[in-house]
Amino acid sequence: MPLKFVAAVWSPPADLKWAVQMAWAGDTEATRWEDPNVTTKNGGTLSPDKYPDYADWLNSHIRLYEDEGIDLYALSLQNEPAFSQYFNSCQYTVAWYNDLLINVVPGIKSAFSGIKIFGSENMLLTEGKDENWRWFYHSGIKANTEAAANLDILTVHGYNDGVLPTSGSELVKMWSNHTGQFAEPMDKKVWMSETSGYTESWETKDGKPGAFALGLDIMTALNYGNISAWIWWQGSQSDGIGEYNLMKGITPGNKYFVSKHYYRYIRPGAVRVNATVSTEEDDLFTTAFTHDDKGTFTIVIVNAGETRSVSIQGNNLPDEFVMYRTNASGSEKCSLIETVKSGNDKSFVLPQNAIVTLQAGGDPL
Image (cartoon, rainbow, N blue to C red; front, top):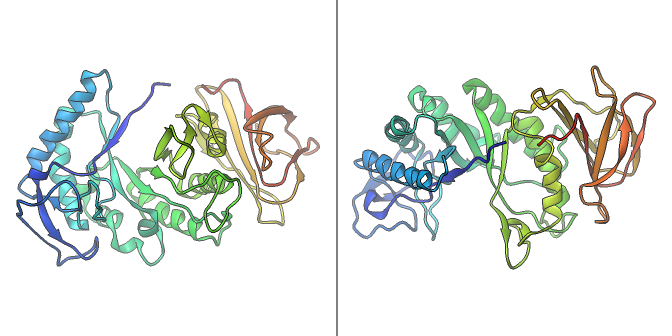
């Protein structure tokens, strides 16, 4: 599978920006004005007179990637457009963000017709929460057919709540709202385009979700957000594994192995199929995918309860699956365990607080 590169802008160049006074993303009274002191940092906004210049600037950078042999797959015109940060940042109201899509994307597509445009990269908390979703970027995009036509992929920064993905959880509600209100009506793919905030511990401690919560949150995003990408802030850094990365150098950690249960076995082109759990307890969760081209069938199971025996049942299932497992003690890290068979009378054991991938059909890569 070819490697795909995506990029997101944190700020346009300073000479393309104006100062801004903006209370919140839906602020209809926000103002913007020329100011020679504006920099790439501390917010500001793109000058409405500079849309063609911004498209040209973006195209020049896409060409720089091409010069290095990289065909950029997708581009975001602005990371987290609601926020002014002390680092490189730029703010847009909902209306200004629509103008950005309408006026800048055609200039990019005319030069690079194959590139995908993703956005808004606002927080799932505001794009999906019951009391918020009506007032932010994706609602504005949905209401503007010209802007919607220029956006290929809906993206959010889906930071977590670290709880079980039962029907009443806040995270399930947010992803379900986003799917029902935006992704399905606009017929667009959905990405979670920036992940961090998970510690290396297995369990949630002092309010900080750990690696096991990451496994639950990816499960939630797949089943209720119908996402097709889950992108980490950073793959690796040299001084340890913090909340932003998966590895120290080339040494993987708990979050790496949890992610591997999904990344390694659910490949681009796989299609999610209906998978349900039959139990009286709300602590067992599953998702399943088939890949026709590769001939694979993949099931991921998260057991958030006690050790239990389970079986795999259904129509047209493979006769057997290879099991990979990560457990709470750390003795198993997406480790090859055994081959299990499908069928009502073919049970196998799931350890407490463990994640399992069942893979059939050969090498998914």
